Image (tube, rainbow, N blue to C red; front, top):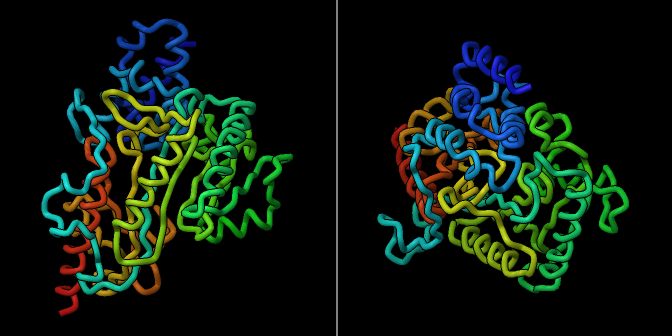
Length: 368
């Protein structure tokens, strides 16, 4: 099998120059691995081999994969994140560590003349003592969900959180039917089905759907924790408002609360920070975004002008439904910093605030 695998990778290298995992694969390094490690690394690349049109082309399948296969993943991370191969990540949530912010540390877009906007900050997290979703068994997924239900019971009992858990696992006491599931998806509380995604299927992440999957939502529905998606947990805070600190600080509190509970040790790498299934999220696992109407910059019906301004600022521009979705009828776009790795959590939120300042100025200039 390994020789067949190497031959297949070699053929794909010539045909798919944008598939990062395929391009970073080194047969000489692969030859040095034990048989067991060869099989593990093959599994990491399976999604990109089965779907050569992938941009990343690989997923970690065990919490230690980034460290165990560092010669491979260091090249992958360098190519995607535009960092050195020996780059090390540092986590830091302290906004006081970032220069160029308001003196009081309050990131209030109302002071920029903007109305209340939809703001969201999310992180991916994985538990250290479970395989990552790409290598989990059905029993693993159910065990992880059951452990999380104990955590959610704690959160539900806390007045600052409250809420409920909704399970997709047949037989679970919190099981919901299809109608409730669809309603939660439409409300942007629950994640969409995974068993139709060819990339996640090939990676093993979508296996055993819908077992071990579900979502916790706080009483105010401004804190959500997804269970069993691309990572064990996706923890997010969302709110319509003007002060970015509110979602950032609440997410930090939720993370600290969850991690303080016995049995909730998250997976970290000494060199790479927060461990996530996809190398694109490694480091912070964080995405901070807000929806903003830019009617002047999108007057031609496209987001081309907004992207031209946002890219040099390190910002990604998406449609309001996420990547590859259209812009809003009023020119509303989803704006978020692109970087996840070799950047701190505080710097990500600061980059969003600073970017919005510049985009607002560009929008005003475009309307003159």
